[in-house]
Image 1: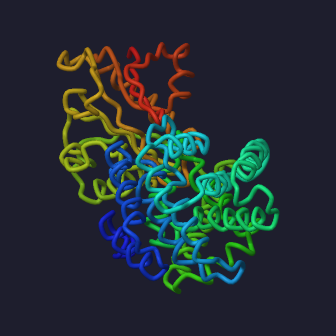
Image 2: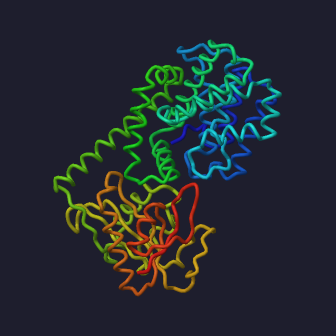
Image 3: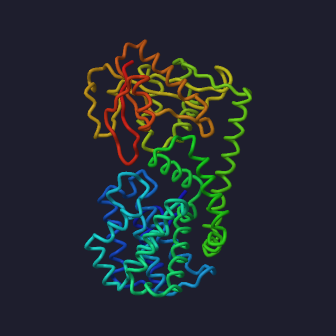
Length: 440
């Protein structure tokens, strides 16, 4: 659960305003920057409803924690530094015309340089835009390889463009330290402001928006935290120490929970590899589908899906009992084993899909829609999903459907073009989770 005071944009704005007063940022133009950022994100569809990691919540969380943790004892920040940190945090992912979720720092810089309203507010605050650019460039992640090299070239140019830094090596070094601080705050903040349920939702949002396969979610989260705690030890330690106890606890509980789930995943994969564990797809009969415990089990697995992939959530129980809906489960070892996943779908006309989709077969009763496959965490990537999908296609064929439609990652659909004559019907960016059709 999110800490109560960060439950929505309005409450987060209030918390930031309280901190701004404490940190000497009371002038109207700082408040105007905050409100302008919120309005712009929301008007561009990147508000709280946007199912991607880099939405307005993330922007506000980073802004809040960057102000809250400035008393860390790694570096001394002046009042002037805090103004720069506030503005850089507020605008660090300011990429409203994004075509992928992860903001491109160059797009962010282009936007904040060209937006007239922003330029006016920054000038009024007597802030050097070149230093803001350096701080944003330093949040480039990962800070290694080509990404780091490209950012450093641009940083050097920004330092040359600024009268404050041009001939001042010492201040350049200090600005880089501020940027390092901001980059670590960027990676800690969301996980400190809520419990593991929120953290897992963030991880799913990140995976969905970056078009990752579900099998990567936990593995990537563990690698992310290990890198943060091992490579950024000093800075992470300083920031966490400056946060309230409840936030520190949130962060470390989340790290430990992801590591625990990763351990379970490895155990499952080892058992599967040693053939101690079999995944058995089963066509479920109507008697089983009427059972309340069966429905409850499926619903719990269904809730593990990213929110945009939870189709007809309100009618879940009703649909499981509907004989027109096909349901297969994935069970452990035999037909009575524990359920670890399921496939589900029915006539296209029973579904209300995204309004951008114009399916020419809608209303012709010749198409079955396969909902996104649902598996328990740990069982992705073991081929159980594709076995359930093939079983579903065979049943669709026996029920005389001509077409099957569903959603899948763009690269997965591409791989099915030759194999299954798959065709794209509607493409979606930034998610790259597209709607496609195959002949049954």
